[in-house]
Length: 621
Image 1: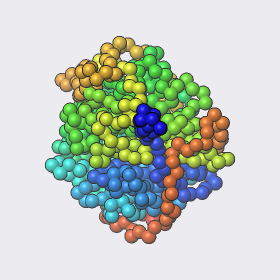
Image 2: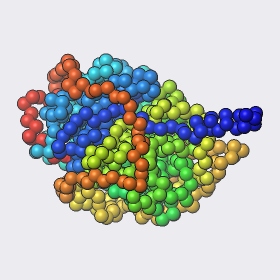
Image 3: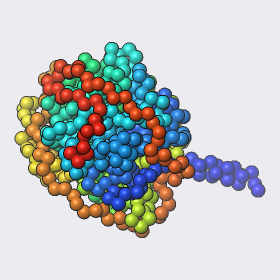
Image 4: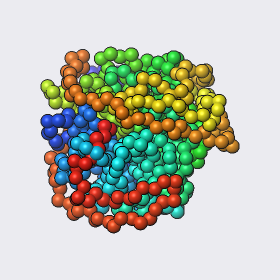
């Protein structure tokens, strides 16, 4: 063999390895078999990383009309390389000797002061009339989980949705060790609820401030200030509020941006809920899907706004995944910043779902990823981690086909761990949708060989559009919908929402050449209103909870246009012990501490055995 031919074959071999890139691997399973749920489905994952430990949780056994059979979890102790521990939470749903029929909305946090891992979730029953906020705790590093403490149990017309938990892990913070949960009560117009714990999640004090919202994600600055970016109750605006006293009181909400969204094809459940993260200096970035940068608002980008204080927010800009003239539709972001980095060396990672063609009919879903190691001055080219797979291969719900209302990205040891769900072709009527991550953690150096092999985006937005509220800053949305925001979609928009017409001509900068001077896309810039402007308050009109309830069961289709080749590689997962022997959680006495916020609610730290699951409210979430 000639020398030149040998060199050619060697180059071809290594090129094939580079072009292969990352793929998805399965890290959890659905162990349940039930006649009334969609077996072998996992949706809506959340994860959190602390040092080398990463814990992920996911809805397992999704129901068409809301919730899942239980929340299952998995754990890595080497920064997302191997996932050796997994199981399902005890004491919440009837599947694991709990009082509730279903459970939804898992979120994960770690309290480094008390050395407690926590998974917050929202259990409920369909038979009658209540829901709750459950906090499952692990005292052994996430290897086993206690029966839950209940931060709040709904009473009367209360009906809970979309919880999110975070803990203050900044040692310099005056509130180091505090943990916070946010959720909304859509039985009372999506009323904001906040809970605070100072003892490792054993007891919780609950408060509200009159804001209406959905999908808030609390974040804690190094000085202990808690900032909560969120969607408003209509998912038409991004708003934020904060606490400067360790959760004793909460401010009213300030306006961040309108949301301009393009309807996602494929009967996808893909609302504009935000994904937010914080860097080592306390700067918060909130991201969501939005179509304002596209001609006629025909497809969605992932966009963001940033703030250093939770009061003044930058004008909206887009992540440069591709050109503003591409046909791709991007949605359901999972955004993360490395909290050990800040300033010009801030490390960021973004995972998202996308359709290559927003006008697809037989739509095939993929999972994409980009990252930056220099505060957004430059970005790796997008890579595909999973897909394409048919939307007909994923769980069906009353709001459309579902991978999750949110996903997450965690960062450990300078590498990203995307957490998402993916699917392979169904076997008859049985789906195969599982919790997945990338086959290896993704280095966040900005020098990914796979990213370099992929064609670079042709443009990025550098000029940020002016997005002011209405000319009357105090104007309120007067539209009162007659729909349940979790089970149906509005046919009209609030009067305060702008049209989807793009009015700004952004300046295009090239990112294709190394000679171009990088422009940081994520430098915090004040909004057009200025820091001295009076914050615009969010609308307080409350949506009705009336609306149609889906009753039909989903139809499982096999899509012949895609091969049955897995898009999430099955791994040899050990059998899950469904009812582990775990010491019961301590039953703390009721907290007598009352918050000094506008309104308080009695704390219910644990669910007493006398509560009958037949008194629980129907929640479709």
